[in-house]
Image 1 (tube, rainbow, N blue to C red):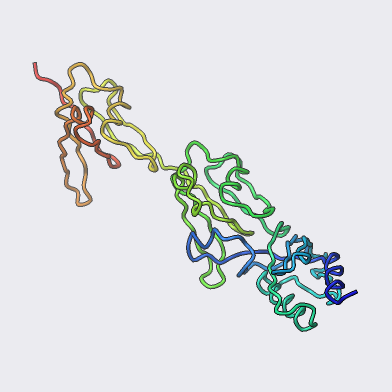
Image 2 (tube, rainbow, N blue to C red):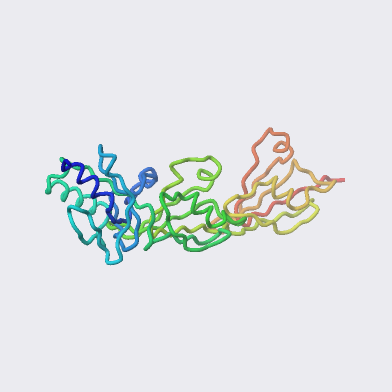
Length: 291
């Protein structure tokens, strides 16, 4: 039996583990598969996929022993708990090389399941909780496990994670890009210890007075906004005497002065002019036809 065959046979009884994190400097980078450049340490019970480039027979799924060690015949038993994925990859590669078992080994390790770490999902989801990571878990998958977004979810999702260089970093994901546009760069891979927060949209108000059926405050979500035409519709619509050609937006400016914006809502309805977004606490005054 050749030395290569001995190595392949012995590898089948390997038990090992690691936790995979890739420090993210951009959303594109965070979407890479976990396994390289991890700053999270390996712990007992973690489940790994180990492979050596060009040697398919050495690819195995393995698990860390209770004492934090792995047994790798003919390399023997050695401690891996406390190492990162990157460090373990280097350790195994060096041992294979030093023992002349594989020439220039390219070792890759990926965490299939992390016993010691999961992802906390909080905020505007239906089932906020801590979720264990099994395999490569993306943001959409974990939000789905949390029951999906609640009706009052805001327009962004925050992913907070530890960074060995800068401490904690926060990634901001646009919900529309993720859920509606299907942007793959927004569907990042999550890592053990990540905290996913879905902020709730704030309830804001504008006011509609004059020739409308239900004058008063109109609430809207901060993530969606509201326009002049939408506000008038929410106020029950115009009365029979409403003059939609003469609508005024009264807006309080930061310096305490008031700005008056004249709007022809009739042209907006006919598609001749764009609808106008309102700002918080604006007052929309719908004029009336004079008798």
